[in-house]
Image (cartoon, rainbow over all chains, first blue to last red):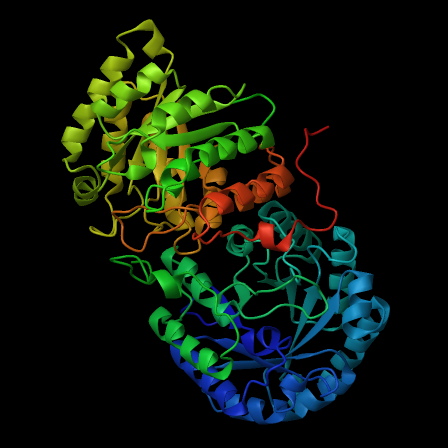
Length: 314
Length: 314
């Protein structure tokens, strides 16, 4: 993480936000979105998902989008990969980070990536092997998203012991960062605390833990607040709250990036993001996806009178 | 607070929720709303505001609504009063609690109740005197709402020292409970913590402190979470998020009662409220106010699979 910020926010709208939307988000609009958010100070953007066109027509322009995103100095460019095939496409692009996602819930993993969790773990092991196979690949960070870690629409509650077990396996194989995904918006703040405490206790202090919350049941930012209390300093979010999981019925809406940045800055936590510039990026999203509802409170209500973003403590 | 719950939720939709709505909410619908929420287990309902018809046409039926609300066993019936005149109407109804509201921001107090804060304090002193004047009145609890305690659309940030000063005055005069109002939805979780800590330090452990948050900027439930951390165990909310302050431009939306109850119960904190019955009450609100948008996530998404309300720890 950069030295001049306290909390890293990662834009996932270009991946999680649009993957379930039928309407193609035009390539030039994607590039404009990335450029504008990078200019607003967002440090990391997950720009696409390396899946075949048969899975999603939204990501047929991955290589082009990644190449363009890499022109922005200082921006960490990441992408999601569901398997080795995706990683084989990802590494040569020269991006900074590949995020592999597997589910803690066996049923959700089957629905989402059509294989067992053990097969997913084996896929990740192969990806990590590929990462370590060349000097160029070794520069790429490997993130692991622990999907449905906080609940599953198919299985309901998820065994926290399974989160630990799978997290440990991925670390053993070479994960650089673990992200706890509330894929379907089931989590509550007490659970978030418990899970991050459990992971910290088992995985030690050095492992980078991130949070990925959905606002499906209104608790997204309360869950962020709970995670902050546990020392988590990296969060995914989606501009205007775009998104959801196509294989998790009713699970719509990543937490709203703009509201997240407002909350953090208001709390005195530096994100490096210019909130006004960030809110202005919504226009690009609206122009590219005219039929999608754009969510978010701060864009509607405006910042409080006298609001000042977080600054370095004197 | 009842022994079988951990957190008290107070419905303010019938006061804060409808005070800014032009359309009259029919008396029989108000009664049906109160009856259904009382049956769902909500322990306290602020059923009206004792203001003259010239201030709001929404509360011309106060006496009738209070009398009806008092027929529900176990329900704490409260009402707001802005001045002695309102209290003189309130006491004879036999309700359980009168909430007096004054603003920490001088400008907001002038806009809201057309007098200075010092005049408002004097009004409260008179109300407390009236409370202590008869045996019947002495049964009535006096709550004080510290409006704009967390920010003001006119003045911006508010001096925390003023919250303490005014809170101490009202306690000296006889307040039984203090509620910190984020009238205009400016608060962030760090600020909420700081203010409740400050009040606790100055006022001691025995003073009952409550939280009243608006979700105008999306941080309502995160602010509740922060207040819970500081030991606050009583919160106002409005079914379906109705409400706002007519004298605070852009400030719409109390936190959503249904989402609040979901969060608390999911966290293992007993509210005494049956969530399913509570959500069903939204239909009464919708039928009485067909033109008002009903907010809330849990009513839309449903509870998580396998969700269980909080129970007594074994």
